[in-house]
Image (spheres, helix red, strand yellow):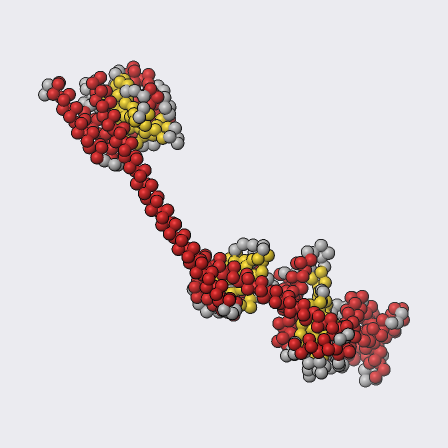
Length: 608
């Protein structure tokens, strides 16, 4: 074929390529087709690359290649033949090695190493090259480069014209493809945003439905327990509420565990609760995941909403339920707290009336509303709560008192059928009806309460100290005032003489009050005269005679009780009692000897 015919054939091929380029909307396809077609038409072309300009990175980035497959190459405008062509925005024919070498000397060392490693040859072997800018509306969008390594088939000037002709059509095809891809991306984005918007609309509709459901339940008179059952049903998880005093009064369980199990491990997870954010606890033994969501009103934590399952996975719709649940529960707890405060205020008025005893009609009116039988005999118990930290926040101390009020009032209800509990300042006051064996029941009740105090203060309120006073039997309205001030008096007296016990019965301390009216020296003199031989013997002996004797005397000479309480053999007790009688030279069957010993032990408690 003659030279003219070959040129005509190449021009026809360019026209055909142009038509094919304009039919494609795929940029990658266009770039690869463009390179292959260019190498087909340029006889001396061995390697071809296309680099497109990135507006964000301000770099020419390799997008297509024939002859090597390395794509991690970026070139600064002005670097190498490609960068020079980009800046000049005109086709450059590097016709010999010298021209090529001069242009390639601007290539960075890093890029040179990358190219030579991929080509497996030295760039100095390049014989000639054509670098043609891809121009669209007088703006260069990239560069196509055809390299020649063969001496026997060189690239010609005519080849540069062919490449330029191809590049004109190629630039338009690339822009059209990019525009199409942008349009397609915009369409996909629009579809995605539409789905997101629809999902948000669905969430909003769901949230509104949940809110309306919970609101309607409250307006229809359903209580907090009913709301919890509904939440549990929607989430398909067990739920419960912990109030700010760490009580669990409301729950809906049975799907994953029982309330008894939650109560059993409550002392473990209470320390994990955080006032203003979600917390969690995993009970490995039972494979239970517990999540706690604070129930808050105006940054004040009213309690925690607990959710129990075997995992802590929540769908977006679950999260909506949780959000609406904590809101409605916050309102319900706020209502309950307000009612409790109102009731406490009214009960406080009743207590004040009882103590002041000014208006009998008002007292009877209050008594009737609280089903308090004024015709019965009563006893008053006062829990005095002291704060050992002078810098303690007042509101926090108030919360602690309410915390103990909750514990005490529940135990009072369980221990005494007819009772009423009040908060008065820093004191918690309980009035109970007198029953058979009342002192024993009260003592058992107080020992149980003080155990709770010890256990809880270790974890929560180490700053508090509690003393308890119990009145004489109150027989009529007129005796409440006297009973109240008698208790305050014995607690003041107990503090003064530093009694080790945490609770005191008024009638138990009557002898103590009588003894305190005597001069301290006289008390010491009586004590020395009565017990000194035994005290001195105790100091010089390992025998626990004093403890044994005190236990025996205070149990009213109950031999069996003393033996069992001290965990000793009966023969040991007999030996100790006989030795004590010898040491003190007394007869325990003698009324006056026993009386002196009892008084001496009372004095010993005071002086110690």
